Length: 283
Image (cartoon, rainbow, N blue to C red; front, side, top):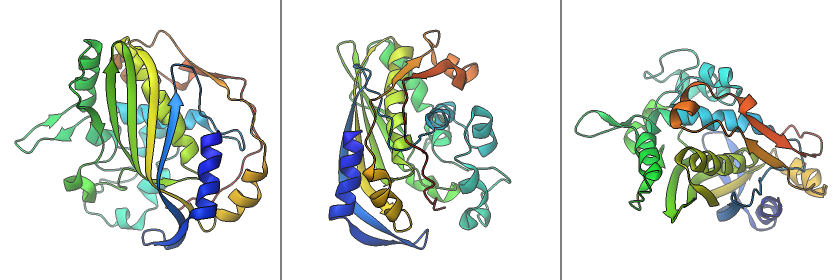
């Protein structure tokens, strides 16, 4: 929570205004932010200075792990986070690669689970990583990436948190996640939960101990229509103690994640929070 608040204050104190072409808005922006989550110690990084919808964040990352490319599938899991980008982004609505309502195109998990090979066919990056880690193998390239420059025009949105690099030291699993762009008021509370969750669940299904997750944000920003709410409301609130996050121990394989797992398999204890803040969302 302190890392989150410190970054918000840094953007307000040190940020520079940058015009964003996609949204037509200005962003108060800083370059490079590094956050660390001690997953092994159970330090769940959930924002408490406003209500955070942690289940939606976990539903989204599960959808990525399953390779979903349709907003309806994400809704069925328990999140509406892709509705707007799939159905209200005018550039995507005009894109000839769009297959119809709710289609997201080749982004995030659709690339991660089915990465096109230049000589034909595709690679299931996640399957390969899970197999390696389960066998205790770390080739220093256990990278789950959603970024494919040759396919960006075939998706409704470029991936923001685009790379997850897993590393083994003995029987302890670590994660380095890289995010090219972050809407801090709206997105970061989601992204923090997702980085923590990804290391926790990957450690569980590969039989390893979770270590620390390192979260790098390249471009961290606050949109101009979010600034007043962040500065005058959220940053005036005192944070509560971090809650405890629990995962159903019966989740033991990637196949479990792909098939029967639902949001009921995750539990949060002791989550105290301030009232929600309706930050504007930029499509």
